[in-house]
Picture 1 (spheres, rainbow, N blue to C red):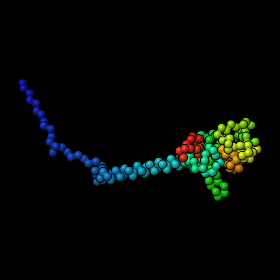
Picture 2: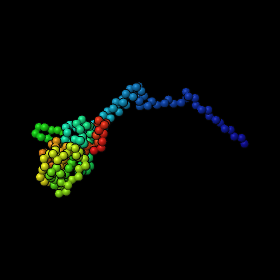
Picture 3: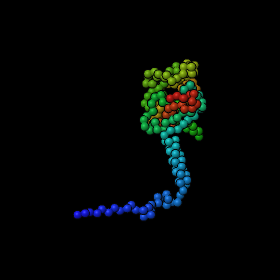
Picture 4: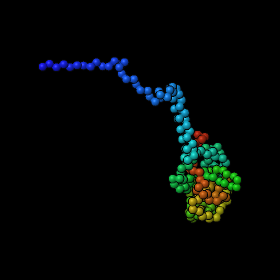
Length: 205
């Protein structure tokens, strides 16, 4: 008994069904137009992300004045973490940017957190004490804060809840909680954590 095997020849290209067009092909847009739209989308998304980061996460602040000398100088630019105090409470020693509203004047200041809610702070003979214990302040420049230039002493002050007591590192040239009182934590813009410009002043805070 013999068997026969029949082989079917591959179809000719002319017999293949046409390839369906892609959605882009249907739109009639050229590759150049599609590339332009892609770039526009990228730019818009990048601008939106930058806006959200600046609004809710990170900002930069330009230092003006000598109240934080010699830690910070006029013209120094610092990055400020605006999320810090949404995630945790302020810590002693933090360098913070805060809003000060005096009458019709609204400005941002940069100071250091010295005392926390519920603590009693006072300064006598240029020495800061908190709850009766002397505060160690290695960030102060002894050439700037001297016995003759540390500002006015003040009697014991109890820091209210949800407030902090801030002072400038240049004690003799700073308007701070000694004059404007403890600062509501809601008025803290965020924690300054690095000097990024000029590059010669680059340092962590």
